[in-house]
Amino acid sequence: MLGINGPEFLLLLIIGLLVIGPSRLPEYTQKLSNIVKEVRRMASGAREQIKEEVGIDIDDVDWKKYDPRQYDPRRIIKEALLDDDTKPVSAGTPAAVATVAAASAAERRPERTVERLADGEAAPFDSEAT
Image 1 (tube, rainbow, N blue to C red):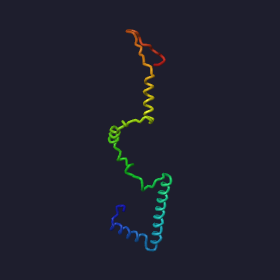
Image 2: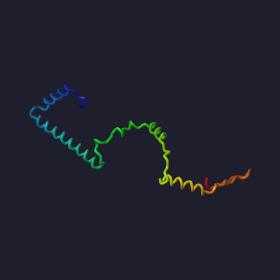
Image 3: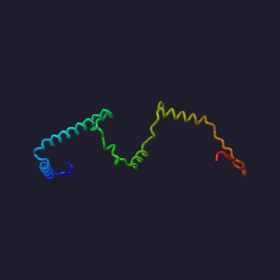
Image 4: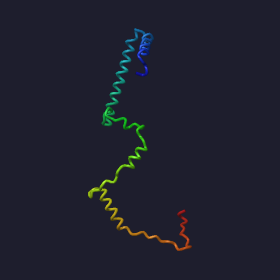
């Protein structure tokens, strides 16, 4: 409780009684209770507002999952590298269709021809490109 132990709390209570005095003590205790009720009402309202807007209850959230200290780039990279992406592809899946389409496109693609310059011939120069 705010780093205050029992004897310190009693000492603060006695000092408060002496400073405030017995005549004004009921008034200040009523103000304190009203402040505590208002803070509880505001916290409850905020909790309900979050529940309405987000759609989840705050108590159900696993806060450890969002702790930035849990982020370890080495572990994430290791898991990504060791992740097995070589799953068998069935005939009806989009991945299989894309694989077949790529293979047929590769078969239809014309062969690339490379024209070489003769020995001693200067390469063409485009003055507008540089």
